[in-house]
Image 1 (spheres, rainbow, N blue to C red):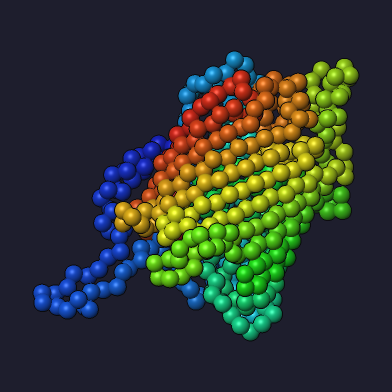
Image 2: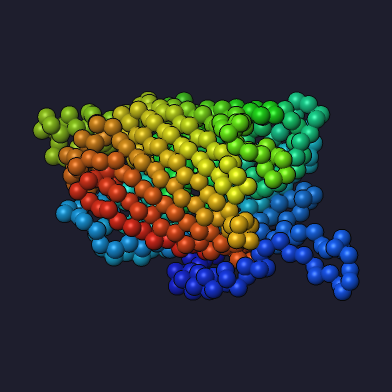
Length: 490
């Protein structure tokens, strides 16, 4: 893992310019291929379709170890927009170009492979560099999920995950499981407990959605790839230490997670005193379609997939109170509202989320998210959202013989409650927002992308985001943020 930026911004632009040409050149090779028959040969001699390889090197399905990696670079820009005033945490009304780079090395080892009591040891290392537009400030729905929210952090490689993943089978009946960096077994009991303990990122196992979760292959916005109202326990880089207990059955799962909260909002250090500071999360997942009977089966007669997930969370941390901060300001005790002046141990923040996805046709999938939290205590770990509603979908390139290409579109509308609005209106600063004033409106974002698989795990994406009322401020915007991305899977 290098100590500096892995893919300079200039090389990203060159790579994506080449990728644009390569999409057209490689299109025939991407389609399922068949061997040409010999003269007068019977049709039966034609070869079966060959699936394209989606990594630079194929991964073993039987080895006890797992080694893989990825490199992701996102380039974004924006021009001038309507902005009569700016504050310390505003999205800047200047022409900006910013690039981010993230590379990850995934390592795993199975102590007891494919048994009822499979044990995985997972260790990952990561390197993050570059910046987001305006240092990832001025938006609740930040346009690049890969950026680190603290620009003063080192870009040196760091230890990102270190987990023990234990499966406890409750039956001898086994079912197939897709092998990956977070679960190495290819067979698991149909009814089982899964236990994870160590350093992790909670969105690895909670609020997962196959249409909108992966900023490396799908959307890039914080509040599209994750539920913006879920203030999940994490440090500045998105990781925490804790445990997850999961029960899986044929068509449903239930999960509970407890994890360490940061010492301060958006902080890199975690509070290890779980008795006074922790994030607790519950999720129920039902793998059933909502639109049963309205959607036709697949071409091969198979049922369409779908899932509904209900999430809730309660955070305890050293958090401040928006209303108390405003009351101190209005009483003349302070010149500007400051949430840090009202922070107390034992403060509670809670919320709920809904996450659903549905396969509509062989090519089309849709998804919806809804999130809500009480928004009384300060936004502490993820982003400044009190309520969010999202709908969108993706469409595969099957129809134009590009099976592993995807085009996606999503709309998300974020909001905050009255106390939070007043805090920003009177000049208060959150860890992301603060224009020095606020004429409130919902922050509405439309994002689109086209992601092309070029060759053996090499992807190129072009897309963009249209943002109305950035940072909930009707006095500012709208603006458009074009995006290009290069991604490699190893």
